[in-house]
Length: 309
Image 1: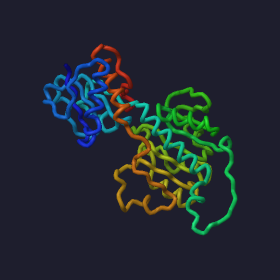
Image 2: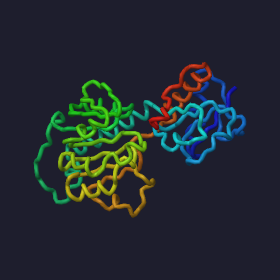
Image 3: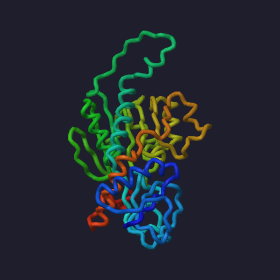
């Protein structure tokens, strides 16, 4: 019997209290799973960020922390965490992100807003280019970026992907490393941000890089809010260098009611819904990692502390 502490916002437990124990039992592991386990009896922690100040030295038996979310920036720098840390790579998470990104890329590619909201009943035929003539760049070719890039390429879009280290993805033009970041951005008509948030990626989309986009380009940010220099983006929207920004993540969430994004007609705000961890699929990932830990096998999706993800 192992003890698994569910350390996440209380509202999450209602969604996981049936799915997670069932998935763990399915892989043949006997476990007590609860948000209430004495510190000295905790063997594993299933972690969904509650705050940034957890002292993991309080758990003397702790063997690993298994994240519920893809992002780990709230925990990866915690100096009290010395056991392995795994992030969530969940098929449901990837599926949701593909649907959000594909939907908004098609929305802007097709110019759907002008037809959905047309109070003056204007008849102004202006067919869009075919997808093959629309340049889309995705910054970040991890699990989510690769899935989104592949889906867009299958629709015919001209997709460039950029990653920190070299990747090869069928049907995508893949660039890598700091020396090719500007090349990836140059002339992009739709830019999708799916990078992890690290000190190196904060403000990736700043004024000089916004200036490299095709005039009137669209920016989609379902990644992390701090990837974008907000002041620079607002200025680019004002000048027309960026035609529209659809943003799902922000430095402060919920987005404050007085934030300029709310007042800007060229900005679409979605409330961090681009993708979410689904209890049914995420529980399977957690259960498999617990089985591996008990069997002495390598854990899936281990975080590289030096990179921050």
